[in-house]
Amino acid sequence: MPSVFIETYGCQMNVSDSELMLGTLAAEGYTATDAPEGADVVLLNTCAIREHAETRVIGRLTELRRFLKRDAVLGVTGCMAQRLGPRLLESDSRVSLVIGPDGYRALPTLIEGARRGERMTATDFDLEEHYEDVQASRFDGVKAWIPVQRGCDYRCTYCIVPFTRGSERSRQLEDVVRETEAVVAKGLTEVVLLGQTVNSYHDGARDFADLLRAVGAVPGLRRLRFTSPHPNDFSDPVIAAMAEVDTVCEHVHLPMQSGSSRTLKRMLRRYTREQYFDCVHRLRAAIPGLGLTTDIIVGFPGETDEDFHETLSAVREVGFDDAFMFKFSAREGTPATRLPAEMTVPDDVVDARFNELLQTVRGIARDRNFRRVGERCEVLVEKEARKGELLQCRSRDFKTVLIPGDKAQIGHYYVVELTGTTGSTFTGQVVRERAPLPMAGSTGP
Image (cartoon, rainbow, N blue to C red; front, side, top):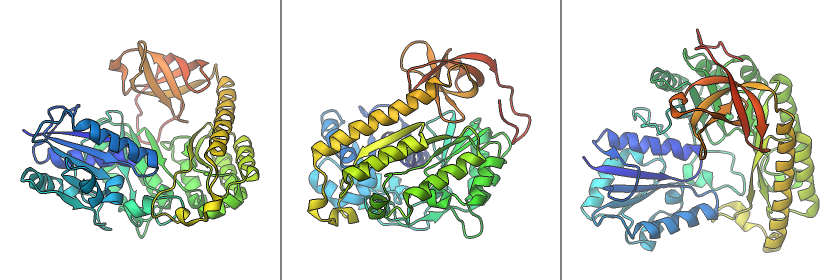
């Protein structure tokens, strides 16, 4: 049986797409391998959101040339493949396949063509493609990533996603519920709904509030999460569903990108600083104990010292639990690259701002976490920790907690007491094991 190795870069949507690719190939008799050496097919599933992500892939392709077996098929898939297309074939003679996110159904056929010496690209958009009949081969034995929406219509000026994943389209609610029932039947108790702006989900008749209520009611489901939402799409019905559906976890990753209304306007984020604060207020008022994380870009063209300090003040006012922070990366083809050159923020200024933001975010998170030592919370054991005989767990509000134990406990729920923190990660001691849920919707420590 032929073997395939898939290496994944980027977001959770890419992880889900790798599971789809593996499922497609498994149906044709391929077996997965955990290393590229000796594999018959090697696929790099790529990200294009920042230049650094693409640079890593180019370096990895060079590295792979040294030890792939002679007749192995090497392919690049995902967003970088969609963006660069045939240019990847021209730049690396070892690459045989370049496949965008809507081309995975044809993988077996394309691989067979590559075995015959053909070099092909498959980067056409398919606005009807949701891979409904493909059974994903899931990597994670604890949670399931379930795409409910593909593409994006927001067109933020810095973002490459609309160019690599196409226009927004949503799956039918019944199909999402059916997939959730299938993964729960296999023993997975946590589901993460995926979309580029997931809370703008609409299947023509039902919106994201309807989806949360329908998926959250699946018997046996214990935790329901979603990522990434857009601040503009947190309607009152969506927030009410989050508050009322017990399986929906008390955590939202709410990208802010900037705390300056002036910068947000150039980013085409379609909300102001004050509107973002209003969204935060409505979420926290409805969902006590809500964990809130975010994305922030530093050095967007035209960002002044005043704009940056507005971002710092917004971080302090909101009090995020954590943040993904990025230096602006110009992506070919996006509107931000057409802004006047004199608006470019010098690298040394970007570096200084980034470091100040990093220290501010971490300081706030550290203070919040130290105040929580001694609390009790429910955790799900996700995997073995990197060091020591410890297990890595996740609380409902998305805190990382390390507890003593062994891998037989992965997938189990416990109530733990938080005994310490490094400022970002907690240590905990098991108080008791959580009893199995008697029915869907019963939850809480």
